[in-house]
Image (cartoon, rainbow, N blue to C red; front, side, top):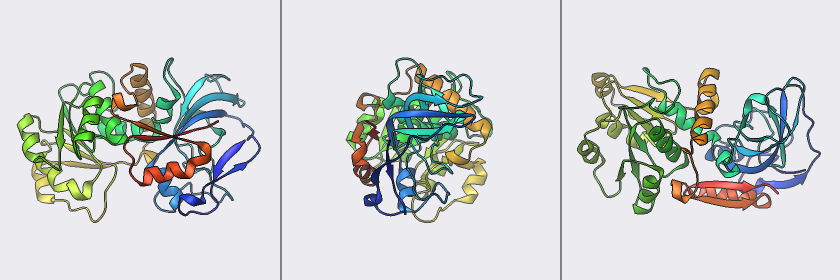
Length: 338
């Protein structure tokens, strides 16, 4: 089989394609023939030697947490999953050296999830890191809900910072599916168009508008803020968040995090830091189940008409795919596996 690998962390040029044997499947494991792999900033960071890595001492490392494809083999003791099933996978390379940027990947059954009928591999490959992160952010408030479903956020307001990003897009779509009113901030008219396509009720161009004033004009103080740049936005977030509100931080941004403690105390604000890899088993299972349900309801989609344009690369150009993510290509970067 063909695998994209790197031996040592470095720039995108360290990625190259090698031929290897198809891996065997062990007890409790599922082998997936990967059709499409997603590329996330965390994949790029691991390859570059910063941020989250697979933590193994393997001679070669295959990047890629997310992907979708068809079950090729199942190990002893596996039930509920059969050869030929269409599936999506999550956290493939977390504490493992074998990610999704290859033709076959073997994973514990828990990491292999049925893809609802009629849902494309593109959707499946775009779910893992972005959608599971978004679900955790939207359910991180002390008073819940613990799992999203239609109506779970009814009567609540969510502010999504960076609504044109992959996590931001998923957060908008999941929050709307769960019944929330959704406000979002974006950089420029093109990204505003994408955020509206995702379903945001109020779209604020932070480069051209006063975000605090626009949020207040909406009459809806956010109960939850899904935050992509906390170091830059913290003062603003505390200013606009509702009393007893939650600021869910999944990317700290650059520089120190200036927390206005007195204002946080007066409002009884909850700061929740999010890293999808280390959520509890209960939290992860709830996220996987809810995301799969949203996909089946056609509430979580990809493509420009859903606010998440797709940029594709063949397996042989995985390095270019990583470079596209490093250059902050808008939308979702995918790799097609031949």
